[in-house]
Image (cartoon, rainbow, N blue to C red; front, side, top):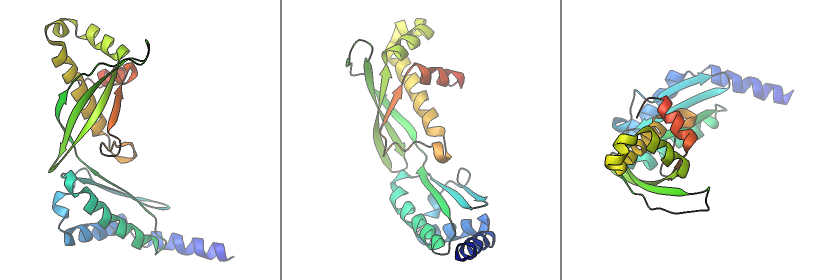
Length: 201
């Protein structure tokens, strides 16, 4: 009986608040902290579900990530104390500034990797990530861009890796990639086919 009352109260709390109200809470908190100006309002989203809310805050300046995440988590905790569930993602928009490499390594005949280093930027923040290009991916790139590869193979590799990173960075929601927490990507033959399927290269 007690569990039923608690569940009923929780559902009532969710129903009595809308995604618009959640957005206002977060917007007001970030505005007070001087951070709302770096929020990309076109990519951010505030969604309502039967059991709670989902919010994705996208920043144009990665140097504000820690501060913004702290503010939004405070709002999340405040709502949780009211038995209102809020799932939050705070991420930044990144651009590929530079790609350089490779540094050839060999991990067995079938496990060859060619690491490339890329510099990503988001407002006042930059970070380095490593892209391991597999031997099979290199072969596929050579075959697909044979004429251009013969003239300047490194330029072709940079272009493909750049577009691969742009694709990885384009995903939002639960599928987003955080290059600070996970500074490594692998470009294998499967990922390459997926990339070509998006006609980015």
